[in-house]
Amino acid sequence: MLERSDLAENALQALHDEGYDAPFNTQSLNADTLIFTGGRQGRSLDGDWFFCVDLLDTGLRQKWFALPQAAPEDRIEPWDYDPRAGETIPVPSCWQMLKEKWYFFEGSGWYSRAVTLDAAAPGQRRFLHIGAAQYDCKVFVNGQFMGNHYGGSTPFCVELTDALEPGENWIMLCVNNSRTRDRVPMRNTDWFNYGGVYREVTLYETPATVIRDLFLRLDGDVIAADVIADGPADSARLEIPGLGIDIAIPLADGHGQARIPARPDLWSPDTPHLYDVACTVGGDRVTDRVGFRTVERRGTDILLNGKPLFLRGISVHEDDATTGKVTTEADLRRRFAHARDLGCNFLRLAHYPHHDRAARIADEMGFLLWEEIPVYWAIDFANPDTLRDATNQLRELIRRDRNRASVAIWSIGNENPDTDARLDFMRRLADTARAEDPTRLIAAACLVNHARLRIEDRLAQHIDVIGLNEYYGWYDEDFDELRVIGENSDPDRPVIVSETGADGDHEAGPDRGLFSLAYQAEVYEKQIATLRRLDYVKGMSPWILYDFRVERRQNVFQRGWNRKGLIAADKTTRKPAFDILAAYYAECAARDAP
Ligand code: GCU
Image (cartoon, rainbow, N blue to C red):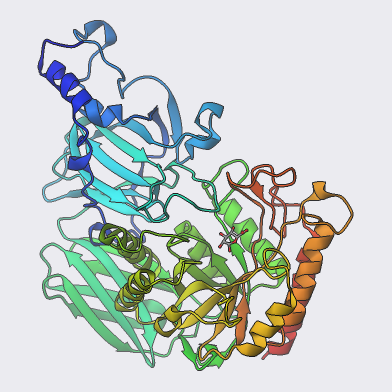
C-alpha cells in the first residue's frame, strides 16, 4: 500500500472516500455556456485519443487526470493507469462497436490527447465544443477540472482560455454512460445504451467578444432576430443579402433584438428555400443558412405557411450495425433518400436529439422534423435534479436547432405514465420550450387511455400536438378496439400517430405468424385502413425505418435487435410493409397536391 507521499495520501483517501465524484458533478456546462458555431472554422480534435475503461471510477478516485507526466522508468511510485499511454480509440466513436470486451461496458471511459498550441493572441478566447458524449462528461485540461455536462445527445462547450498554455496541453474527458434511475433517459429504454464521445470534437478560437446565440425566424411579415454576445460590444450587424437586409442591432448587456420587415420566399418541403445569413459583433462573425416559414395549429389542423397539411412520416433512431450511434453524412443522406422513396415529407427523430447534420440536410432536401428529448417511459418525475437535466437538454436542443426550418415540432416525452408528478414535470418542460421558441409546436408521444378506450391524456391541454403511440395488431391484439377508440375520441388538437407497427424478420419464414414479414405487412394494411378514416389524425410516423440494436430483444427472430424496421439492419433490404406504406403515402400526396 502506498504510504509515502501526497499521492500515497490520495491513494488511501481514494479507497475510503465515496464522495469522490461530488466535486465533478457540477453540470456547469449547459445551454448558457454554448457558443454559436455556424460558419466558424475550428480545429478538429477528432482522431485517436488514448482510452481506458474505468468500471469503478478509479480515475476520479485516484485523480488520474493529475498524474504527472513521466516515463515508466522515471516513476517512483506505482500507478494504475497513465492517461498518456496505452490503447487508443478514434473520436467520434462508440466504444461498444470497437472491441468485443467493450460491447456491454457501462461505466466511465477516459479519453486523453495532447494538443500543441501557439500562444493566444491578446484577448483571444478558446472554446472546446463536443457534439455529444453519452452521458455524463467531465472535462480536465492540464490536470485541472474545467466542467461537467449531463445529457447524451446534445452539444456542449467549455471555455479553456485560461487553462491552455503555449506548447503541449493535455485534454482529458471522463465519459460515463451508466444507466441510472434519475437520468434522462433513465435506466430502462428500448434502444441500445451506447457510450462515448460519438460526435465531433472541435477547438474554436474567438475574439474577446464571442457570439453565443443567433435566432432568426419569420413572424408574420417581419423577420425576428435575437442575438446574444458575450464580451464588450454595443451593436451587432445582421446581413441577409438575399433579402437586401444589412442592419445594425443595438446590444444591451450583450442582448439584441430586431424585427425587420421582409417577404422571403417561404421554405416548405416542396420549396426548401434557404437564405445565407451572417452576424458580426466586433471581430466575431458567424453564418448560417436559414429557411423562413411559419408552423401553427388551428383546431385539429397543422398549418405550414397558413395551409393545412398531412405529415407523411416515419420514425428513425440513430443506430447503425457497424458504427452504433455515430451517424455520418452518407448515413444521413441514405436515411433521407429512403424516406423520399417512402413518400415522406416528415420524420420523427426518436427518442433523443440526433446529429445536427440531420436537420441541416432536412432543411436542404425539404423534410419536416419532430425532434425529441429522451424523457422516456418511467422517468424520475418527482426528482428536481431530473427536471433540471431534462430542462437543460431541451434548451440545448432548441438553441442548437431553432434556426432549422425543417424542425416543426419539439417533443418533450414518450410513453410516460399519466401521473400527477409526470404532468407537473411535462407542463414545466412545455413552458420551457415555448419560452425558448414560441414559433414551433410542442408535442409528446402519449398512450391511449385503454380503460376508457379514448385518446386522452391530461398532458394534452399543455401541448399543441398529441402524439399517439398505438400498436394494435402487435402489443394490442384486439384490432377492433382501435376502431372503437377512433370513434370514441374527439380531440380538440391534431393527433399524429407517432408510433405503430410490428416486428418482421426474414428468418421468421413464409407463414403469417408473429415476427413474419407477412404478418408485419398485414398489420400495416389494417392500421392504414383504420387510421385513414380519422379526420383528426394529421400525420403518421410508424415505427420504424430500420431495424435497430437493443439489449432487451433476444428471441430467435430478434437476436439483440428490434425488427420493426421497414428496412432490415443492413439499411438495404426492404420488407413488404415498406411498399404498403409507400402506396398509402402516394395516395395522400396525390390527394393533397396543390
Ligand atoms: C414503444 C417505444 C419505442 C419502442 C417500441 C417497440 O412505443 O416508444 O421506443 O421501440 O414501442 O416496442 O418496438
